[in-house]
Image 1 (cartoon, one colour):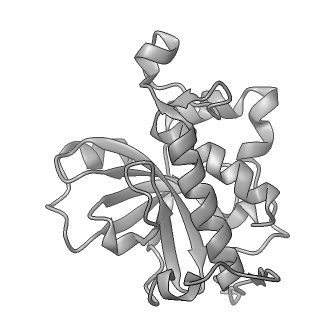
Image 2 (spheres, rainbow, N blue to C red; image 1 turned 120 degrees about the vertical axis):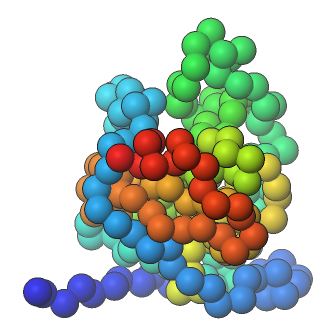
Length: 210
């Protein structure tokens, strides 16, 4: 077996907001990635649209993770908070007249996956590698499905979420992590990520992870 080399990029900034170091997460862990699984059908539809094709490509020349410098952390916090505040929550049925449609909330309205996709686009424009930023399907403690954005860093995987402004290590979210976009191609992989504070994964989790 050939050794796997983990590429890491350092993102710096000339000045970081006061207190950025204090808000940065302690060193955590990376999510355990498994075998390829069936992608979310709405993601497949989203990726098939020419205007969104770039959002689904994986550039293998990019690093798989970032060094979470104060400058990078400040950008992540700022964009997460800005998108959460700037996009009015609206579910897909109310927005599009049908369930499970992914877009970038260009009209200022959207649900969980739309906000996370918008955050990724803005973060990529700010210099973060898309390959390190992966959309993930999770389950809340009550079994409700939800979408978040994970960022792989030298401090472990962190999570951007529209349910809170705080950017947290994945294990501090209370979610069960089911699957996410692969870092090695336009497909999805299973995750073995049950945060310590979550209840056991509900029965439907195994079905959608296949």
